[in-house]
Structures are given as C-alpha cells and as structure tokens.
Amino acid sequence: MTALDSESTTHRHWLFMIRTEDRPGAAASITAAFSGRGLQIESFIGIGDAGCYDRETEGVVALTFLAIPHRMDTVRRVLERLEQVRSVHVYDYAQDARLVKAAMVRTCAAPEQVAAQLATPELHYQALEPVGAASGWLVHGQPPVVDAALGRLRELDPHLTVLYAILPPE
Image 1 (cartoon, rainbow, N blue to C red):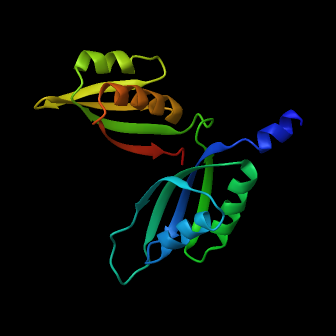
Image 2 (image 1 turned 90 degrees about the horizontal axis):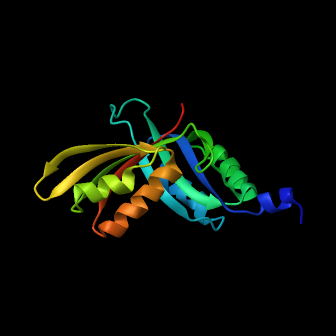
C-alpha cells in the first residue's frame, strides 16, 4: 500500500456548510443522505431565516462527521443534487487553518485550574464574569486545539457546559 492509498482510506474529520432553502424537510433530506450511506453525523447545527412566510428564505446547516475522502465526496455530490440544497462547502476540520472554533464554557472548576488547562500558545481565552460558584470562559482557536482544551476541562469538571460555533472562512 502506498502513502497515497493509505491517505485515501484514512478517516478524516470534515465540516460541511450547507446553504439550503429554509422549508420543512430540508434537514431530514440532509440527514437521510448521510444515514443512507452509513455515515454518522457528529454535530448538526441548523440556522433558519425567520423572515416572512410569503417570501423565499434561506437556512444554513453546519455539520461535522468522519469519513474517508471518497465517501465524503460521494455524500457531498448527493447533497448538491437535493432540491432544497443551494450549495455545499467542504472543509477539512483538522487541517484547514482558516477555521475557527469558538466556545463559551461554564464550569465549577477552580478558575486557576481552568486557566492552567487553557494556557497554550495556540488557544485564545478570556474569563467572563462569574455567576455564583460557576465561572464562564470564552475560548477560541483552531477546532482540534479547542477540542483538546475542552477535553482537558471535562476531566476537571464532568458537568462542564459548552456552547460552541465553528466559523468558516467565508
């Protein structure tokens, strides 16, 4: 097996940003495209336009999943053929340096312990105003770096609450 063959059979983490018509069934057709090909969606965030009902509205679906490049490309082509889908943008979750993951974190762990876990050169973080016994933090950086930091924080506080967004370069 060559290095190229090995790379094409290695599962990679992908981010799809899908622009859709915001109407009933759009999310269901997207998830069906994945399940019909044996792919499991890791995260799925849909944002619809709350515009007037008498005009066309647009939604955006951000989803992440693991797949080999060939299967990622197959599901991308299927999605692009769906009536509700306007466009599909593909990003390599772990390798695309243009992606930013931002997380708001709430934890009961000691603030100095949290700061120690977040103190890496690749990560940006800021303490927010504490609420009761919990402290809040804003964390951002490349997705794999933020994911690693959130994993370390979850070891400190199994009840960690996280709200995040992945910001594409567009």
